[in-house]
Length: 260
Image 1 (cartoon, rainbow, N blue to C red):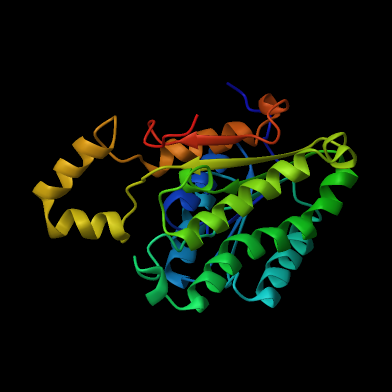
Image 2 (cartoon, rainbow, N blue to C red):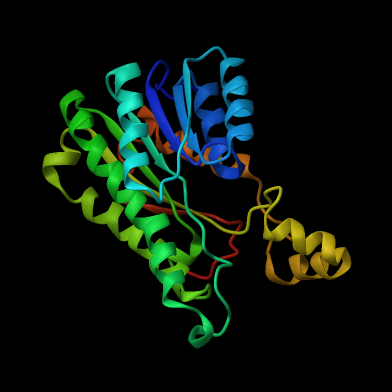
């Protein structure tokens, strides 16, 4: 299926590892020119080479989205190189394992930092890109959230941040001056995804037998998802084919979540 996004320009935040990297590579497979930003320089270099190998134009920038000036710098570099942006994927996030199970023992700073990393970084990129999308009358903005942006069950600071990201997309999807200019706003809500060097891998290595039992008990499919499985859905939502999908929060979780 031709998704109709060949030669468009995309930015994937946190696009050098895990879900973000899979999204960047998936968009490149569709012929998109892709920019990624990340804090980790070795991953930036590796991802840049992999994108180049797919024959697309790419830009890889070291930046920390917790710093507002870095967000502005990333966006300015993208516009300087390409002059516009068609697709924005706000993938940077995290905080689901931050703090402690005991809310009272968790410093308020954790709540603030999780909100800043997930919500404020998304808001800042969205505000920067909308004028370009409106002008060209085409755009796709996708927030990578979580099933815990749709239901309770995670640590509350993470739930709050991911819910806020979801609500942001839904609110913007109702703005006629935006969506009637060809811009869509959607959220993709992954469940448990096996990503190297993350908490799931740590738990698996610590006790493989208990980990296997947990997967059989908690996950209907008996396994965690793969980053590529999320990326395939994102690529479709970013496509010309998904023009009627607007304001949706789409779980990609193998029915791990309990909402519907």
